[in-house]
Image 1 (spheres, rainbow, N blue to C red):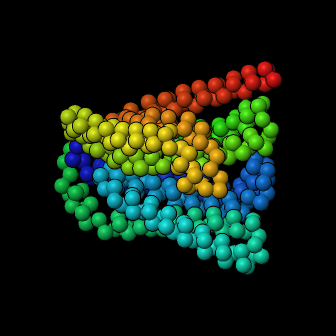
Image 2: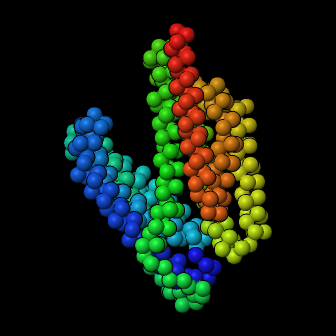
Image 3: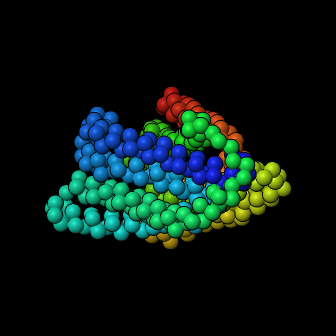
Length: 348
């Protein structure tokens, strides 16, 4: 989109909103109507059917909220996104406690109904987040209208062309998110299977619980802080690229990488040197896992830098590079863990 084309940007936003509203609606209906089959045939957990039904409307609200957050981020208005996400988390936490307590009393502490209530709280929270974004959008409608009137370099594009461009941008990002989730799930299939070659099944499950429950939570905290810089980097670099301002691109990328280093390096060193005291402080009754945290802490600095570089690449329009990189990582990790598991089984 040419620099100064506010009208074209707003038109893309409206088409993207309609497109993802349709995608979200289809996804919600598929989950709602297919909840029985998914719970009984795929998950083989019949009790999960009610949870899936309660979650289904959230797909629609997440889809349209993501478009509005993307629009505000593109305008370099990160406040709207941050406030809506904070509101969403507050609603989610509060409503989960309230609904679970009420349902526990009514249903006689039925875990199936309580799980459904907790998931319904998530759905209400996504609606609250969207509600805030919509109200914020309405308060900025005059400002947006003024920008549209001041448009120059407007270039008309067909709706079909715009949808194609939107999908070309969103598909690589979606694939990256899917592979990130897949990468996390790899451990659930491989870690316990590998550890069972050297210890009992109960102990293997316990070690995986330490990795997934305590260590992953601690090592993800620095990433949660750094994600703000990676997110803000995308619209900033996109705007600078539209102006052909290479100096600003270099400065913002360098500053974000430096900030990421200042966040990641102390966290890596601190977790590596003080893994034991950290676990004793946070988990006084279950402080095991010092060695696992020390090893995992070494990945923090590299993951944070990867997060920031991906934001810079997405802002510059190189969307497939992070996707290909993560795909190679997933393939390498699967191959390494599979070969390790096979070799361990052969030696035993």
